[in-house]
Length: 244
Image (cartoon, rainbow, N blue to C red; front, side, top):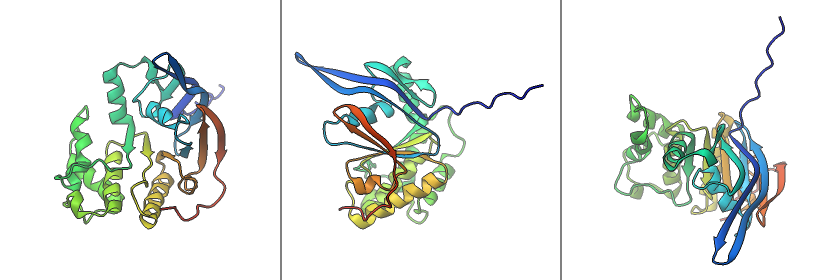
């Protein structure tokens, strides 16, 4: 009896001839033009490009916040173009952990309760959301700051809370949008090293940035210009000090 062929792992992100066109009055704006790539489980990928390059449009699609005009984008094997608004929301909640430049924490809520928040929308409900939130805060080095509200935390600590919140639903990928943009250079380096540590533990991370020094902490670089993917290459150079 012959052995069954091993199954090819499903990419976390698979883009096929991805196009996005916006109509602004009588003008058509081609934000993405025929973009194709795959991102597999355990990768740490930086997406770079100047303002107007299409990287924000691409990020919104990977985050299931927008759908393509043509082509296909699949997240964890699910074609986002085939989903309803509610199904897109469910995909975002369960498959993607978001980390933003401005942290987006509830100001009067403890770190623990901020991290627990996504679990309140989980279906089915988890048995012990507090235990999961505590574990995620410990994972990012904030085990001693769980009861602090954001105003009692430094910028770097607030971003760690945001990263813990992104981890709490055990997502397939972390999508980080300019995650060091509001931090000084030393704190930026700490956050990037945390991402490196999470990636070493198997987490798939996609980081959108316009800073080459930040992108250097990833292991692969996708560069977008004028709506096209112009570079897809491994990051070979060691990261330099992050610019403030």
